[in-house]
Amino acid sequence: MRTEIKTPETDFLPGEVLGLYHVNINVSNLERSRAFYEMLGFRVVDEFAQAGVAELDRGLGYDYTNCRALFMAIGRNRFETVLDIVEWNEPKSEHRGLRLHDIGAPRIALRVKHVDKLVEVLAKQGVEFISETQQLNFLKRKARFACCRDPDGMVVEFVELLNKNL
Image (cartoon, rainbow, N blue to C red; front, side, top):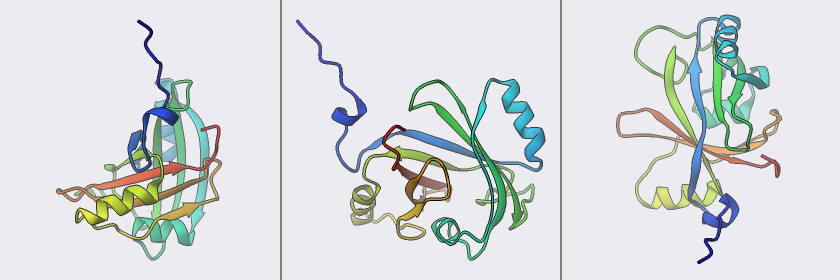
């Protein structure tokens, strides 16, 4: 009996979650955190400094942000584990409760196929989104995303990668 091997492209339907995209970790010192995660085997796959990128600000529910960030990955395939390590300049991070810009892990991002379809399905089930789907073109990993909150208020981000090879 032959077992068919399924791939993410054939195994998932539009609007289904494909897996974890990245985990956001806010830090007080980007260089110190980079050195620590590189020591663990992570490598930098993208980095940026931004201030006032409208799509990012709107998608995260802010009027204005200013931060520096690294995407650090471990693994060697398109579903590698990625950390989004961010040092916020504005709004400034504080060591208390977990808001999107505070030290800790206040947000998870799930990789999805057809983010707009997923948003439509979840909205019909009463899920409220921070904003409409946003598209980020300033990263190497071009993406569309939308964010909502879980029942405890943690932000859950749904990411559809636009690069064909990712």
